[in-house]
Image (cartoon, rainbow, N blue to C red; front, side):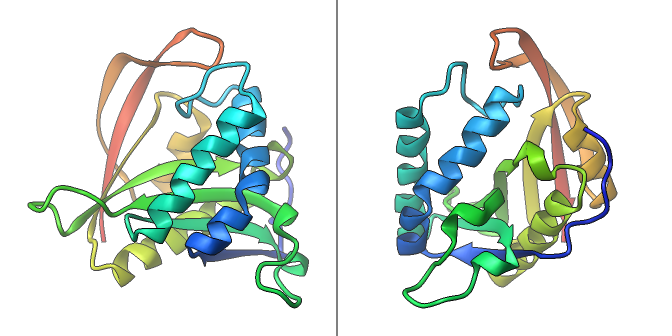
Length: 191
């Protein structure tokens, strides 16, 4: 995909449990697109809509319980109007901050499911999500963040530009959606 100018009409917001539940179908669209595009994000091909929506319902439950923060990137035109979340189909990206960790890690959070729809990649969406993630972590008094990503993948450049430090690689840690092994690189960031 060619580089394009940054998407100027994208806004990043945090969803509460009810809003997350209302966004399940739109989030499933992004997840399915990413997996079909080859992203190793815990799912194998073919990823059915049933499996994708079931995953996002579990995430929405976790958001409602305060176990995680769910951030979404969507077009600004889709964030206004009556009746709560409008234009939920305008979601083009998402990331999660997992807060539910052991009691000896109250200062830490895990980052999960950084997903950007292929139609808007390389346009600054992921960078905006990561900046909002840092803000959410600070708001929850979390100053050590940890994530993992496919070794050598495009996301590594994003994380390094965003101040993340490489901790190490694990060969054959996971599978790509097509069943091939992939190594995983772990990163951390101190805020």
